[in-house]
Length: 398
Image 1 (cartoon, rainbow, N blue to C red):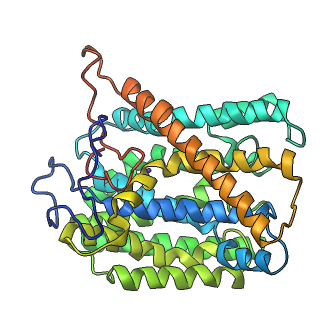
Image 2: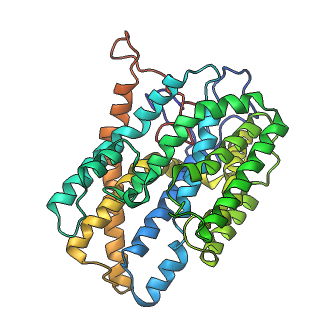
Image 3: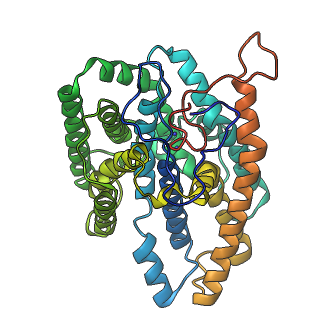
C-alpha cells in the first residue's frame, strides 16, 4: 500500500512540466515538506503494472497477443515493490519531527483501513454469492480484517488477494517510529550505511528464497519486505539532508525499465525484487528532486496526478472485478486480440469507475471523520501528516 490537510486541496500544476516552487530542503524542522506530485503519477503507473499482471494471469488473451501481454506485464508484481520503496520515502519525507507514535498510527489507520474494510466486505459477499469463489474460514476472515494474514503463507491470498501488501504496510507502519528515530540520529554516512545494509538484506533474502532455504516463500512475508521500505526511508532522508547524489529522472527511469525486463531471467517471486531494486530506489528520489527543482516531469501532469489519487482504491478493487468476471467469461478464456482488448477495456473502465466511488464516498469522508480532533467542532478537520491517497504527491502535507 503510502500531506495536506484532510480537505485535500489539489496540487496546483495543470500541465506537463509545471512544478512547485524550487526547494531543496525544509527551512526548519517543523516546516511542511514541499509537495511531490510526480510521485503520485508514478504511483498510478505501478498500479497499472499490477493490473496488467492480473489480466495476464486471468488469461484474457490467447496466442500471440497473450505472449505480448506476458512480455509487457509478466513482471507486473514488481509494482508492489515500488509501492514499498515509495511508502518508506513518503512517510520519511512527510514525518513530523515531534510527532507521537499513536498520532502517526492513527493517521495510517485512517489512510488505509476504510477502503480495506469495504473491499474486504465485497470480497466476503462475493465468496458466498458467486460461483467459483473460494470461501474463507472465520479465522482467515479475522486475520484479513486485522491485516495479519500475510504472516502465514497459506492465508496470504484469501478474500481480497491484493490486501497481502497492506499486511506488509501495517508492519512497516508499526516499525516506522523507531526507524524514523534512528534516521534522525544518523548522519549522512550512517544513513548510507543503513541503506547498504538494506540492499545486502534483499540480496541475501533473494538467494535464500531462490534456493528454498526457508520452508515457505518470502515473497509475502512482511519482515522480508521491510528492507525495501527502509531503502525508501533512507533515500528520503538523504534528499532532506541535501546529500542525495543519484542520477536524474530520465536515467533513473531507464534503469528501472531495464530491471523490469530482467525479471523473467530470475527465479519467480522474491528474487525479482533484486532486478528492480536499484531502478526503483533511484527513480523515486529523482522524481522528487525534479519536483523540488522545477525540472520537467511527465509524471506531474494533472491527469497523472488525478489517477495517482485514485491508485490505492484502484489497486484494492481491480482484482475483485476480474474475479467477478470469471462467472461470465470462464477461467482463462484466451480470447483473440480484439475480444481480449474489449474485455480488458471493460474491466479497466469498471475498476476505475469503482475506484472513483471508493475514493469519493469512502476514502476521503472516512479519513476526515477519523481525523477530527477531540473537542473540536465537526467542521474543523485535523491536519494529516502522512500522504493520503496521493501519498506521494502530497508528501509534504500528511
